[in-house]
Length: 160
Ligand code: FES
Image (cartoon, rainbow, N blue to C red; front, top):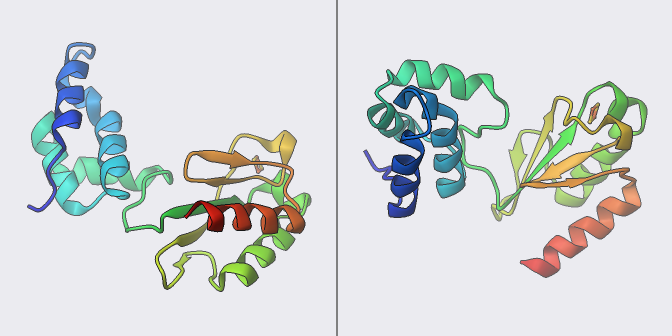
């Protein structure tokens, strides 16, 4: 197995064990730690987590595939997740998607060739009142317009 939890994450897992009734309750925190550490959750990571919390890897895999916030494939440095649900759809999601696709040269489900961007469409991000909404890594961008997309992408380019 090529996945190994970092020393810091192993310490966090040990500390969390005392707060939960059974090691299996650490399932979601462990999946998050693996994703933050590697950028995605590999099958190797699922095997390792299974050993750490004493859970069959297949059960872990079922949970990891149920939640769309877990990436089971590598993603770009900036993972753009655009909401495709009703409020966002009614408030211009299609134009936002077109702007993102045109600017980045990728379609939903694809990553840019330089590995910088991955574009995904996701279900409701829970911010319907500020639709259309997208999430890039851990940050929300709300009340989007095609012009705002240009500004956001330019600021990401300056950042990197
Ligand atoms: S419908 Fe897009 S955030 Fe809820």
